[in-house]
Image 1: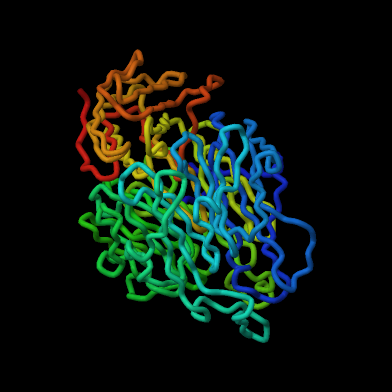
Image 2 (image 1 turned 90 degrees about the horizontal axis):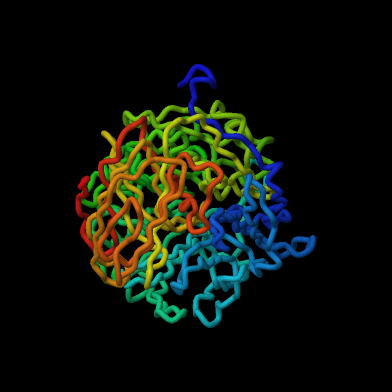
Length: 605
């Protein structure tokens, strides 16, 4: 562990007070100890109005049965004004749902070029259509995705069959109701029941009909055959076969890994793949999940958080559809075992090319401080820096003043809120205001962010994989969908350090309705400017630095050195952290990989 703060290259600063965000979360608690209170609510970052700045959407709870009604509470949308300042635009945007919000997904389900919202509630769920004028419309009844007869935080937009239309996965937790409410006594104090006290619930899968409506295919797809207590959910191509699979971490039950056959049929492979339980063969109280290539071997690894007294789990992807628990040998469990761990991220905070770990912690009982000395109601976030040698270094509490802020964390989202190439953090705190941590890590490395925009269909490019090689480092960013204790925008994002970048993108099929495309390019200088490259299926790319063949997508590039110049079509694209390359190296190649297609190696021309 570094001996002083000066030796830690990660610097997070709490800037909440100057953001203008006045949102206050409520869990509806009133002494009845309903299990749904422990979940709190998620949040999402996305550019709802297309101005190039990342906005924030907070979910809220509501008063529960027997709780005094302190007035109407609702979800809130904050527009990014620049300079880390935000404005509450909820009334004019029309997204102030007053249900008991748990999870949220962002995706352009109708391929009109504007991101939509789906909110998972304790009660009826809500689908908001983006009207492209700064407002949204509730289209839930028409779309056919209202089901809300259970509780569950995980929800994802995902293209399960590679047809270019976003489908919807809704994770479920348990069949809780006021009538089957369970409480317990612990040390003489009334306590919440657990997931084992309620019937487990199967997850739901809705297939897009391509016309703004959905069909429930939970049973025919094989998803409904498996019931658990789902919390964190991820959609990613874990087995590298070109289609998108689904990972569900369950609370006090075996995790699920649904392997996609490419046609929308799923087989549960958690035990076979090695992610159903920890190294000791035990299932634990899993909460949040994220994925990322922490060891730069080209395969997405999984990180899962869980209950107090349990170690978080880092599953290393071995390739071939197999994982191993490497938590202890990598140091990924440092400092966090005593706490309840919620939202998490594999995030490169210092732009050195390696994914670090952030864990939001906090208990669900404010009486805990009187009953236990092992943890507390408010807890500082756990921050582990990737040493680049396969191990993590605990920098908790010394990664800037923001790392010492005590949180009651639930949802955590990671995104570049101020367009400076460094990933910032927003934490949804249960029963409290959110926390915004600005990343001020003093890195001199360059960065690059890329957004892929489908021209005809699959506008979000969900499932597309971008590979960058710079010097000796090869990094992969996949446009994944994550939900439960966090939510992110659905765009692949890359950054890299280099005075010049060579891009040579190979062909790919599947994304954009099954078309095949390819493009090549010349060097891109890392000058203080924005490079925007567009293309469509009818003609080549046109840009002074790039040339290409026919391509069904828009390719937006923003590189480091960006100062005052901005372009409205370019934005930080993913809450899952931009990728980085170290030093003054040259990018040797980039590969894009889409659902339903193989990956092709790419090298400079």
